[in-house]
Amino acid sequence: MATLTPDAPGTARTSGARKAPRTPRAREESLLPNSGAGRGGFWLYLIPGFVLLTVIVIIPLVWNVYLSFTSYRGIKPPKFIGLDNWIQLMGDTKFWTSFGNSIAMIIAMVIVPTLLGLVLAAMLFDLVGKKFGGRVASFLRATYYLPQILPVAIAAIVIGWILRPDNGALNQVLGAIGLGGLEHNWLGSPDTALLCIMFVMVWVQLGYPVVIFMAALQRVDPELYEAAELDGANWFQRFRSITVTIIRPEIFVVTLTSTIAALKVFGPIYTLTRGGPGTSTIVPSYYSYSEFFQTQQVGYGATIATALTIVTIVVAIFFIKAQNRAERAESGR
Amino acid sequence: MATVTNDRPAVLPTGPKTQGGAAPALAKQKTKRRASDWVLLVVAILIGVAIAIPFYLILVNSFKSPADYASGGPLQWPAALNFDGIVNFWNRVSFPQKLWNSFFISGLVAIFAVVISVLNAYAIGIGRVRGRTWIVVLFLLANVLPQEALLYPLYNMFKQVGLYDNVWSVIIIFTVIQSAFGTYLLSSVYGTFPREILEAAALDGASRWQILWRVIVPISRPTLAVIVIFFFIWTWNEFLIPLTFLVSNANQTVPVAIAVLQGDRLMDVTTTSASALLGLIPTLVFFLIFQRTLTRGITAGAVK
Image (cartoon, rainbow over the protein chains, first blue to last red):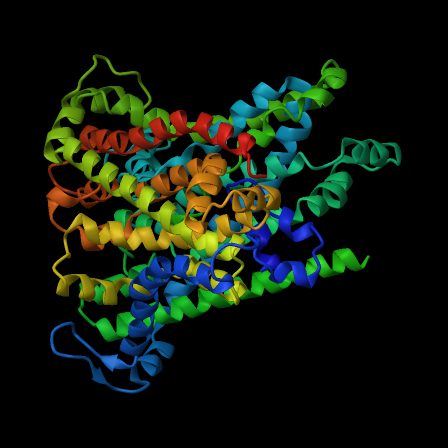
């Protein structure tokens, strides 16, 4: 568990426990020494949480995996068909398109915001904060963060409104400044719809890394920078070897949580394009939703959902392993 | 956590720490501003403007008539304040009812989920039950899972018990999902709870149940307050499960009610803008109200 501790986004860092060296004996003891009937009594407190978790998460999850091996249209009981759904899935171009679009979501929600967020956080913290005052930096940070507070479906509606085909703000402005030739049905054309969704996600996501990274930069000792500056390191060298190294735990947290979020994108697709035009903006979560409730191919929808779950868990494990390796390398130095 | 789910990714990260940190360094360097510094400041401001423009567009165009929009374009300030779009949409979705639904669901989820989290974390962080690492991993997993993987079975289950299209289905589901994250977080907070306080309480003859509610919960209240607020906002912003489970208009939440009307033929350009405005106002208000509480909560953090 220790390895997971730094992954608490959005709250006070709770990793203190991890650093305090404890003897194995002390770790096994309850913090409450004498009362009650030994340690067993604490299990009672887990009962409500466990019952709820079992009913709402574990049983449905297992059931969903089972449904992926059945033919089920929601009315007659599911019929076991073995691996048929999975074989169909492997050859389903729509499914592969949806995962390709997930990669587009990862670019828009992880790669671009993290890289841009690193630069912006360093810029606000180092330069704006120090030379123009902390208030200017705080104000800009709050502005960058603004889209993050919206329900993502509403954020999509805001941008979707600007991109309306006939009289949307973007097309109106293009027409008004004499660039009417560039007017476009942005969300309705296969060539731009995915890019527009990506744009929405960058807009939504950018504030998250900026805020987390700026908080992390507090840990950087200014003397390190001064020393590096005296040694003749330029801004970019300092940024790379000091800033990025020190806030690496936060970079892991941001990339992990955003990648998982990117794999699950649903709201913007539902509100803006419903996966279209054609399959140009389909994502796995919307694909499974539409199999469940529109085409009523519940067994196949469950297969897509199960595949998405497997990918999500593999990604999470991969990140946590990578983080452990990095931490070990760090402490081995 | 990223449910940023649509999730979860990101609600209100740590505001407070960033507050005063730059201050000490700033005094001595503040005067030495080079031309390149000004250029970078302008770049930072331009990015801020670009991010804020959609909010500005939604704000000004929600108060125009469609004719005003057509003649003046989207960037103009409204020629005359026109509330038709807002009033139309407000009545069309019975906005107060949707607000109440969202409040009711999010509020109850926040309270229930924090109670469950406290109970779990008491056993895991303070009781240190055997196998706690795996228990925490299990809870965390519940939070990381795509909700699609639970969707159809839950849909079936709630249909069978007669809670489909009932706000309680959503309340129960999110109580579990949010408390899974709360358990993970609080367990590590309680794991560092000062042992002396617990020992003193035990010496005074307090039972476990009393220690939990009279000692641990009051001392960790600032942390719990922050968690309640996170849960509230996260639940408010949820989309997939409310969309699936709350099909009749009278039960819908704010984001769902607004999203399902997009593309409707009766929605003209300014009414659509008004719908986005009504959708974003509540969360903006929460942000303004809660920013302080969150700051206080984290800095006060008595537990730590």
